[in-house]
Length: 214
Image (tube, rainbow, N blue to C red; front, side, top):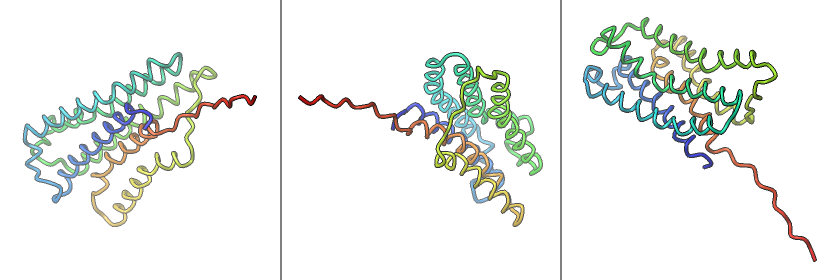
């Protein structure tokens, strides 16, 4: 393991995605848990504490990277930190939306959850992908070079999205609401894999100096 702070950040992202999927599972899968749980104060208190804990896990990794970079690289790292904070803060948006629409005690209609999920997904894409590309275009030649992953790493990053597309296609053909439950975990896992790749990326070996022969 090369970067324990990256492991902490990746763990935070995966924990938030898992928690959101549990909430969606309670809403849409009767066997996932009692729906009365969503009406209890301790469950939502736990959600807030978990979110605060995950935000704390994110700080060391991103602040270290921001402090070690300069110019456009520093700006890109700062934006990634902001995007990560928005993603990890998703539970508070879920809680506020649920409280405003009285979904803490009454299950929301399926159409409303689909709209809510699509909105989160669009915001995610805009913050984490579209806007950085736009900033890179504005920077022109001053923009930092894009990170390049190996083919194996790219497959690992894309694998959660591939599974999500397969589940959605299966639900469209066979029916069911499983995709509404798994999409938060798989999307967050997709982002978490990037952190784990940083954590376990091998450092380049320093060249060894051979002793001179007498």
